[in-house]
Length: 448
Image 1 (cartoon, rainbow, N blue to C red):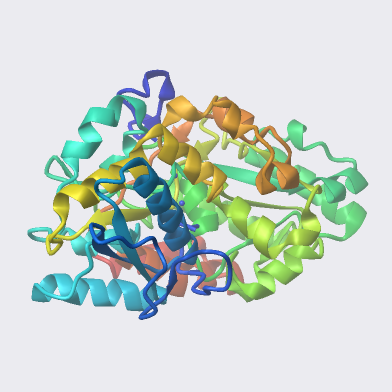
Image 2: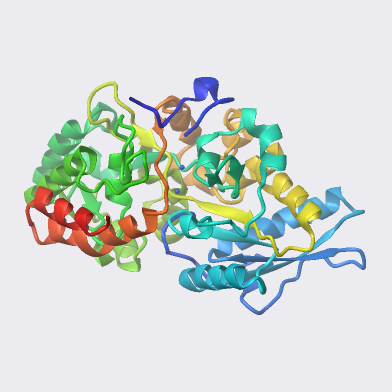
């Protein structure tokens, strides 16, 4: 049952994802380019007038601060009677989340609006959320939005966050390596096909087909979430599901690929490690599956692969089954301590929910927009650093799988489950070769 499926045939009612940029704790906290936002404590240089409303924004992602800085410029140009002065503070991932939680719980010191990464979000809606419901700006646009991306930030009928993207998962192939092995990416339809093609690549080039994360969750989460089940890392009722048939199937398959040499552990342990970027950038592996937002990691951290990488739908577990899942994410929230609720809501709607804002999430951030009605806009094929790197068919791939993008279960147990994957199950199964079922049963029992 595809209760989670992101059917865009009825996108008006539907659903569907996340590394920021939006997922993971790989925040890029540098403030060394043309962006106006700066690191914590430095303030900003957004336009200031006597009438401007000063609003403060906290994030762990420099790119997000730069996005809002640009959107403030556009807002101020369009709304000269209600301009905004943005103070965007960028701090390390853990610092932002910890400071925000303390400020909300203590009732003072919180910014007007902030970013919360998806795996941390459940911590902020326990009990009575200290965040403002956003239904008044989301509901009027819901028919044009991928609803599932809003449901994951909802509680008791109220929406508390707005993501940056859908985060559809895809697979990135190094075509240069596949060509040397005589493998055509378009012939790989299922994960069984992938494993067989991987053996050919390994035998003919000596290069592993892919890398698997041993200290992060993305490699296994994407494959688990794409399964046509109502359960993934969590069951539909919110309880941990690491010993369920979905996770067991995925981890057994991954362990087999590690044993055969088709897959190797990602250098540094995860797909955002500097060691991994160096390894992959030199042609260390032939593929990696990550959400669409991972394109920015290629363009910014693996420039030598420009023109060599192609994007395709992920293989299915069985023919006809879903080939993607909406993954990762970071929600922008408005705190209940803001003194400027009306203008912050209006600005957030402009920046994230409007057509202009949705197009900007692609042109500025390289993310797949939350508004599906812009996916066919000519702007999505216009030349930019992403089309120059991967080709102009990026949104053709997204359109091809738009009815196959599974959603994910997010709940209060999500942070614990993710933590257990990072620190226990992946290492024991993929590196230590322990019995998969026993490990997952052991780890899951400790989460209840």
